[in-house]
Length: 445
Image (cartoon, rainbow, N blue to C red; front, top):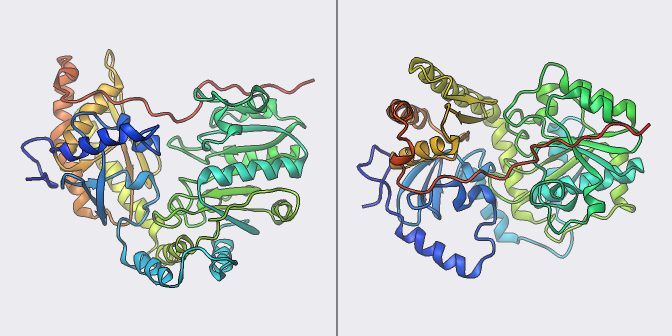
């Protein structure tokens, strides 16, 4: 029988997952469309590889095993799987069509909604992926300023201007790589020293897990404004989660441009670029950024319904309350166990990360053990709590019950240096995230 969400006697059987994986290896390069969903982030040999369906906060793999999901599609499912209001909006639009030969009224309607809820969204542009709109933002910033350099902090997609300066930059010309530079989050002084008249824009995630220091974002905005440099917020994770209007609303900081994708349509593919009208109007004639599927109607219908649901149910506030309960409970547990130096839950409550570190121990081995034990209890976990509206208090309480069972055993295994011997699958791989060696350069005198 497939495992369910309970303290199961054994790890889930995953033979059907493994069969699909072997078939995929024969025809796909790479095997995954998103690294965070790939087999390297889940212990090979014990973790499911393919999911079949989801409902609310739970998912079922192709072998029929059930899990509470804390990945939530790697972010887009801010409400949860199979939310009836969103599904019905998609179904109703599907009856009329998906993609048309002329523009659809939903393009105007959703743009109006976005302009109302996101501060400083004087103009709106749609596309399909986060990389689309961050790259469009970089292009229009260069056009508006007449400058070439880009300063960036965080992960901004796979396009040349960014990925060329990471460890996976093969295939990108050196001339492109030499135009982008990275800086450390919260390091305002390095930016102050480096900004010059060649810098078109500064793009960053307003936060990942580390919180911005007091005044950092406001000081950054003032520095950029004084230098004639555009400030771009990459709000793939912060938008619609930390507040309905994203980080600009939450922190009270104005960005010249802001990009959104995850969470805005509860799983349907939609990306949004917003910003100053005087900048955005360059797309009318001077800057090219178009795609056949930018106005695809199912995603727009889903976005309209998702935003309406978020307003009606105060979703950002709910995510904060649920996430904070789980974060506080976890940190209290590790404190009670004398494990605060080994593991802690960090970040804003809507999206938290669990850290694992112990002297003489490989942190990925510790994380693999946690994932293995959680899988046996029916929890799909990659080291994060990506909160959704559908996560119930029962889900959260059960999750803490599982942590309460696993963490003492982890502590004991660390003390006896036996963690790795307890693993039944392969150690997790480090996920590719962003450049770690910051290469911001000073002004040219």
